[in-house]
Image 1 (cartoon, rainbow, N blue to C red):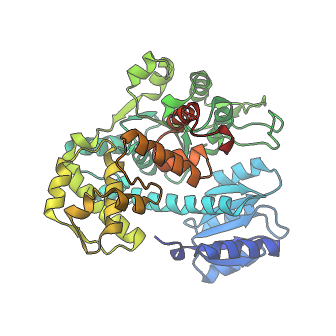
Image 2: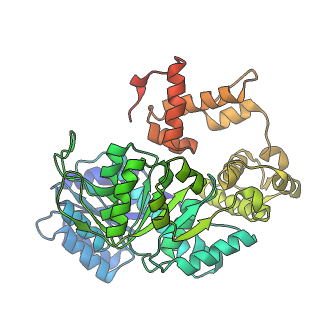
Image 3: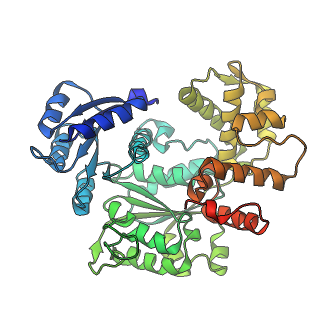
Length: 459
């Protein structure tokens, strides 16, 4: 859906903040209304439909938490994001437990608020798909009619309402996070937080704070108290994505938190108790990961109560055709493409192709073809363009000219993606579809070769 399909109500007793947010969100094509008090917000809701309320926490006539409670009582489907500038992290956590979708701490940048709002609407759409009672819609964007996928659907249905941990294993691009989301949104925790932690994204020192939070002054740069992902996921689900990339030393602390259902923030003594459903993913062979020291054996047994193994696309080729039609529909809606169908020759060739990147690679191929297609029918020629210049112009990052090696192509793509993202490792790795550790190894090699300098990097 486009942003103009969504309406946002901004509530803040500071008129300048209301005006600022109205202007910023209008530029992103959201339909925005601003008011300066909780009572004004409630009055507006009596005669107007709203998808999301962005409200300040501390207001003179009515606290944001009071507005949240009243809105959730009368209109539980309206999302609420809490803004606070007063260091009241406990209040923000309380807001989440009362049904707030998220919170953001002032001061924040325009990009920060854009990201929080975008995350809300993306999650709302995913939740709507996953909790639908119509056939496979219950499983969101998990698509497939193969026996392997039917078995996975049955497993999701059986385990969703259990409190048992689930370990989802499979190669990159097979949809492990989609399985995790389907489990959460088909469970009795569907209206509670679903929190994802990318275990490959941060070093041990920062990952501990990411998981458990920290107290003010716990370390250099800790200028305020921070609530960790465990606390934010209380009563909901915590996804530990690519758990085998987490530092082995931190895995011991993680194991204790899962076993005891309690932990303390970095630099703090208070034991914090939580009720969290744990899901984990990995693209590694788990036994090999244990033998090589990437995964603690005791943590493996704690997480692997219910295993789900996602097969590569090469082992479920009958799913390629329904996936293709799913992606055509998806991109037609997202990008306004006129593509409606695909020719038989193209389908036959797709069924013969190897997809090392699995469903993600297939999705990227269909996306490229729908953008390039000049007709309502995807043809074999458009799907399998070999002209390097055309491919480079499409992506806007690589222009090779003379024939080059695979290694040179990879290097140019990585370096230009880093430049595009202002040398942010995290954003670049996400854009490239690889984990941060893999990207870091590539960067180290380029540094040794004298191609790149460490001074460029922003994270």
